[in-house]
Length: 216
Image (cartoon, helix red, strand yellow):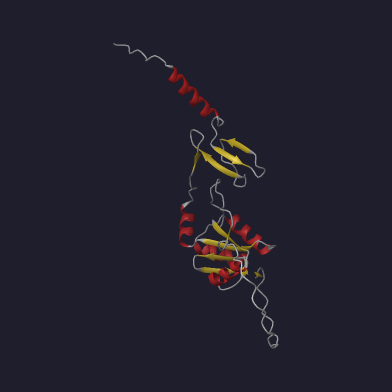
C-alpha cells in the first residue's frame, strides 16, 4: 500500500478559493427561485411561488438564471397545437373583456392576448376577424365575437380544452401586447381644404351589437 502526498497549497490556490466562496455567497443558499414583487422587492425562495407572485426567475445550482419552458400536460399540448387561443381586447373600460380573460384563466386555457388600441389596430382586427368587436376569441380558424360563456365553453370543449385548469402551478400567462407594431407617425403637411360636399341623406341606423360586445 502506498500513500500519495497532497501537493502544497500555493497563494494562487487560496485566492481562487476565496473568489469561489464569494460567488457562492452572493445568492442565498438553497434558493431555486428569484422573485421580483410588484413593489420591486427581490426575494429568494426554494419553493415554487404562486403564479401571481411577481416576476419569477428559476435559478440553477450556482444561482444563475435558468431559461426553461413550463411543460404542459399532454391534453393541453394537443389542444394548443391544434386550436391555439388568441384573445383580442381593448385597453379602455371593457367589462366583457375582463370577463373573457377571467373565463379563460379560470378554465386554465393558455392564450395570447392582443390589445386593440389605435385605429391601425382596429383595422387589423377587422382584417383578421371580419369585425371590430371586443372581446373576440379565435380558436385556430374559428372566430367567436362577443363574450358568451355558454358558447365559448362549448367551443373550448370541442377543441379539447379541459373543463378545469390543468396548468402547472408555476405557469405564467404571457403579457398582453399591441395587435400591430407601433410606428412613429410621419410628419406631413396638413391637406388643403376641400370644397364642401353636398349634403347626403342620413344613413339608416346600424343594428346594435350583440350582448357582451364592444364595437370600435
